[in-house]
Length: 84
Image 1 (spheres, rainbow, N blue to C red):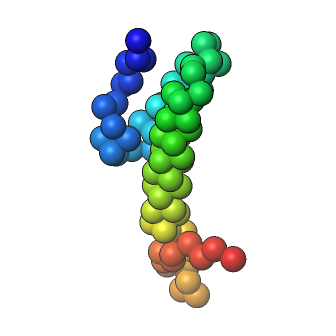
Image 2 (image 1 turned 45 degrees about the vertical axis):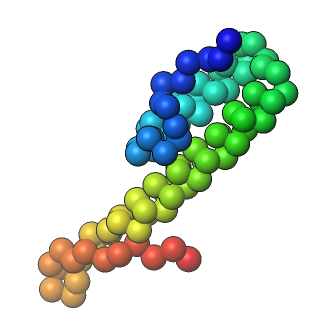
């Protein structure tokens, strides 16, 4: 009997919150009742895809972050976040 997933496919997850929730559900189900090896491998593959979604969303968010600074005249100026 297969476990019901809150999402039909990983592709249907379009938010970091959704991906994290699904990852938490996968971990909880594995911890509760360890599945057969084949199912475990499938869950691992899904988890890797979800992790990639999270990384992409975080990278996009970091690129959008702007820092408000003051210029020589005391005016607020927006600057892109620079990663060192």
